[in-house]
Length: 262
Image 1 (cartoon, rainbow, N blue to C red):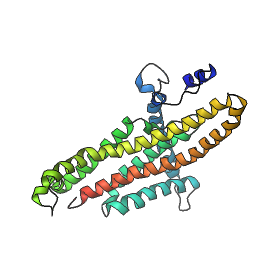
Image 2: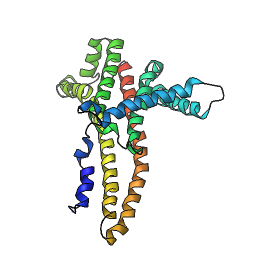
Image 3: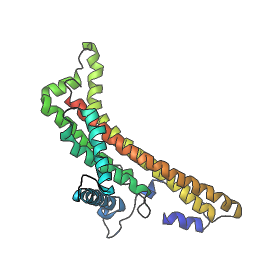
Image 4: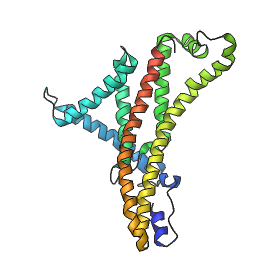
């Protein structure tokens, strides 16, 4: 970002944001483990832990505002995500789904918090790791309930399908369960966070560049800033929605693994 401002001051014109703006240098030291995205991930763990410890520390029948907020988030994941989609076995998966939802949501919202202003999930490695966890969980659940032989048989040979169709369907089903699902799960989250943050950079840095230009451009700059502010509220909605979708799909995959036929 500093290079963008420097170029605009030197009259080189506006340089639009690019993928380079997501490759941040170390905050301190000289190693890749102290970059802003990694520190934000650690911060999110602290924020989530402290929030729910504080919310449940003095639990009462008449809840405080903090307790009420914590309970509503938990109830949403437990009832609307886990129970509605998994069924009677839902409770044993609530801790994972609750952790997943709050972790993704917090890291997404970091993208619009002043001073932080970076969604960690816009680095594809983080969604990949979360998708791998989900991949392991739902396959483990299915294998443990049905046995590895029946589990793989139901994936490769769908009942009620002509045998000749297995030539085409079996490779497709294997690719869907073992490649496509984890990839689409992670890339959906990454792409939304990446694109949203890139758009915010375009309008905010563009407005700043216009503000430093001639009088005609100065008059246009407030519109760029206003659009950037409006986009921030829209981005907040997308951040919440993507955390929900990631958790919902995880619950649906688990439900499918628990089903007798999937």
